[in-house]
Image 1 (cartoon, rainbow, N blue to C red):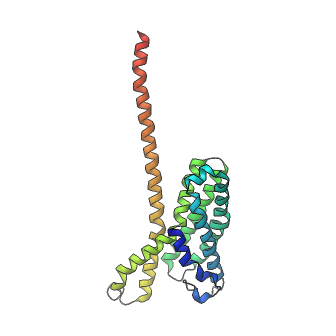
Image 2: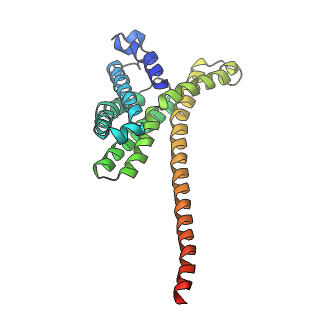
Length: 227
């Protein structure tokens, strides 16, 4: 529901074809910015909508063909075109070089995690496929986290415009955008990685415990056999 609400709010302005309704100002001398931005938003929306059923266990178990279909749409009609467009416009962001670096890293990681996850599925390595795609999904939805961090940064920093920033509105805007940009994707990605590692650690302890229990059970049997 959160993804649907976010898309319903964010997508409509970019379906009008009117650059004046864009929420991201175009950098000077970059005429392709708006069409690339629209492409990024539209394809990223497809990725978000396809990601939702991908993480639904029932669909994966009961409708594997539909799971594969939405998975291919997620990769080829969502992440790949959205990521490539995002790589270009992200590098040319009007909100400063710190955000530009974040945008480029996000786009590269998004593309890399997605392509790796797809390749794992093609090779039948489904456990690794799942891990890589969960990372990809975290990056797909990081735009929502980005907006939350932007609000938090604004609440904290705007009152300090005249003190911390010396009245420099441009520097304040760059700082808020940079914080939202970096925290928007690093926090979800680290959270997913922690969850994956925690799950692996739990399974590893369970395997060790099971082997130890089996070993203890085998000792009396062996002793009884020698008598």
